[in-house]
Length: 244
Image (cartoon, rainbow, N blue to C red):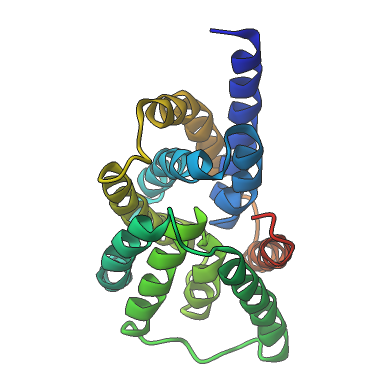
């Protein structure tokens, strides 16, 4: 193993730890912020499937840590929409124009935060709405690597907080990432290099998720929502700038 590869893996592992911790506290954000790092290190076509593998371990650990608070009915509705559209997005990854989708998502995320400030107590969405949320998330996640912020406003409007929110969102994301991985395997995107990188980054993501779980129980619901909204704005700006 060359010195440059060791340095690359150390940088990637450090970033994976910090951003898995962020995801465990806010429920999302790690993938959006990690994608630019992985893209700089590995290139976009490698970064997206590597990020997917890293997120499998991160989300799976959050599901385990918060398993007592999962909202299975919402998870089921979400998966009905997410799984087929994640397959479609994964198959389109090699040719789809990603920049317009990134910028539209950025505008949406920032608008959601503004809307929540104007109308702080929105009407909770019905369970059926999460089928559409899952479909949009599955397609976007397969194309952009991560769109965790897209689901946050809907889970918040539904009244989910802290461990219930984090565990339920992670279970939905896990279903998407497993589906995407299977679809990537049907193409040339899931090659031995990608598998090795994903395996190497797994310990860092697990440790970050464990650390975040220890921290999230110490913050109030009000602070938690504020952290999520700050994350939404940051993710929206990243998408608008074409960094995510």
